[in-house]
Image 1 (cartoon, rainbow, N blue to C red):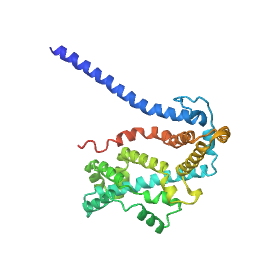
Image 2: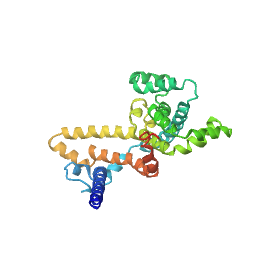
Image 3: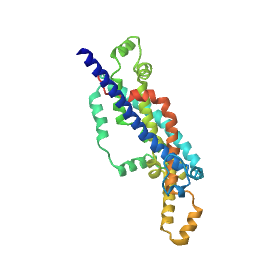
Image 4: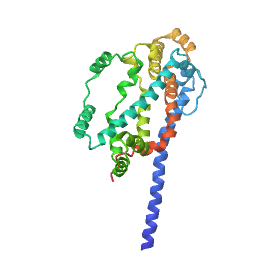
Length: 304
């Protein structure tokens, strides 16, 4: 009887293993296959792709979609601005948010609970878009490169995540450091930051992706075309291309045929090329942060 139970348990374990691998493979395919489809469409002639039937390999290979993207006069400048705001904005945001989270987790700080509540309260309610614009204008941040960095320095959500992670640090480490004469800054730099690599990597990735993909700020708060980041430049280019496509579709007869002969790039193909350009830097950076990110997303799932 015992041998039969062991055999059933082994069979059940094997079945669950197969089931887990099957689910993981399906999840991977649900990500990989759409990405391959986007890549194939970005490398295919736009007018030919509009006929359909392209899945994971281009039928009429071309680089015109990417050439059209890089033909924009301010594409390089937009790329540099995106790199600047992503690197500087991520570094300052993570560093300052980590310092604030460390202060909030310190129970000996006067008014710690009240201050935590007031900061958390700002995450639940917003003043609205118009008051936010007025504040930026009064601070002379509109039409400035600093509008990409300064308003996003602090995130209450990220602060609470860091605070939760810092609270898991053994108090004995901090007490031993204080006995050795270490100050709060020394504890933060020598103990808290080195032992918090998972949460720092996860929050850094969230911040970097947010900065890199943000087109809204450049579109609404910046008027100078030379001050707009890559995402905003590409978004405006897609808008113009879509308007051209709509004009083409509204044309009739010989006029439409003449326009079709001249146009090889459509709004859809240009959109696919844009997607590949935007996601490539994140895809290249993610493998280096993967081991820390996997730990960081588990923050708060267990409490010892």
